[in-house]
Length: 101
Image 1 (cartoon, rainbow, N blue to C red):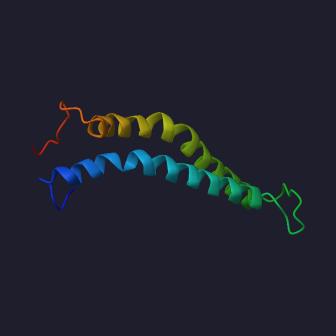
Image 2: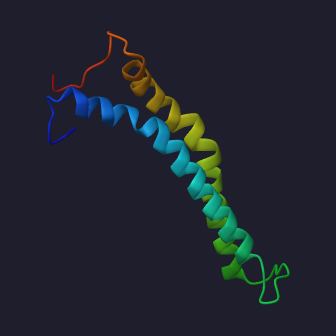
Image 3: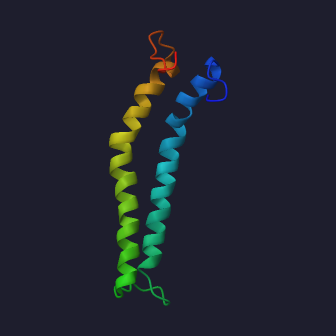
């Protein structure tokens, strides 16, 4: 879209593709963080090990990834993507244009 600013096809692709890729990427990242957190909580034998301060730093950071992907992404980021992409996807004529035009 930035290489071809006057291309309507590039603009449409740029606004519609994230409607699919954002939820898939967000879910995959959250799942990866969850799996990593579960593995972090295990010791060598596979049992839960709840000791060590460095260990808990990793768990808290992975928990933050889960919080952001599970709460903030769907409630704050995705509605903005829908607001931009749905008019293009549905073929509405009253689409908003960028500031450059």
